[in-house]
Image (cartoon, rainbow, N blue to C red; front, side, top):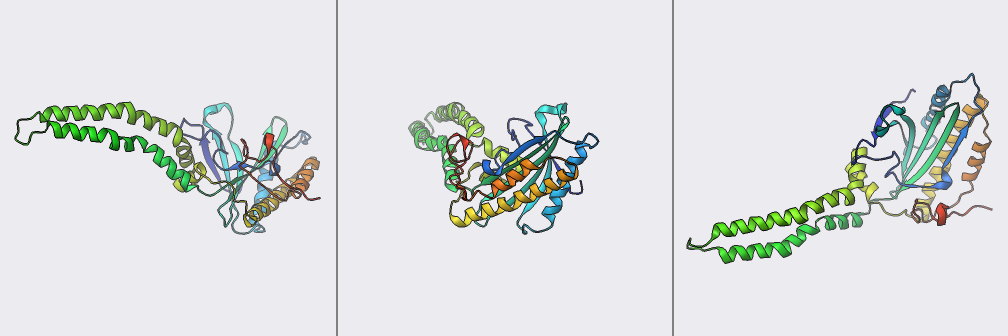
Length: 303
């Protein structure tokens, strides 16, 4: 592999991503493809074919036909939970950020599986940062401290004023002790449990994304992102990216497959299918991120 390969582990602990695709955006099913091929020449080495597939795609990406705003990297992802049970899996990651702050990510994998060859391509979109949602989460996180100011603090001040003797004869030490106990009780009963809840639920994704990406702004965006900008200019940017990158990947795979005598019918069919998808709507509309009931994409097709 001529390109540099970055090593990345996941599932290292509770505060780590559980999957390489976690947080990168919403899956667009019509622009995703996976298939397995078992008609590989017995004399061919699957590992060498996989390396050749990555090299061919990288060669096309480096040609510059897709413009300068296309970025690509290669990662060897290792599932830490599996330890020595399996080797790392290589992902080719292709990204583009539109001028209207939609991030497109395409993941391509060419993996050997026994005597078979697996080809997988998934496409994701990520909206811009939802700062209102982020500020709301901060406000919710600070709620116990706000309650402290408006409920416990007046009681503490009242106790201190009532027990403080400016002539030195009052029970000032007792007032301090009562104040300390009140603060301790509130901290143990309210503050600590809430911090555990906030870290474990409100900010868990942010911690995982920041730790994985090493970029706080990107981690916040992945955790607090807006729905896809559905205005025509942005949708056109998304579609032109997907309709340019995916055929390039498929064309590269077809060249290698033809060289090794592998069937290309399914690849040709997918290449034809993605060119008929003319719109993407409500990408964030359903549970697994693609619009329409049952995970079916809501798209319009040309006649």
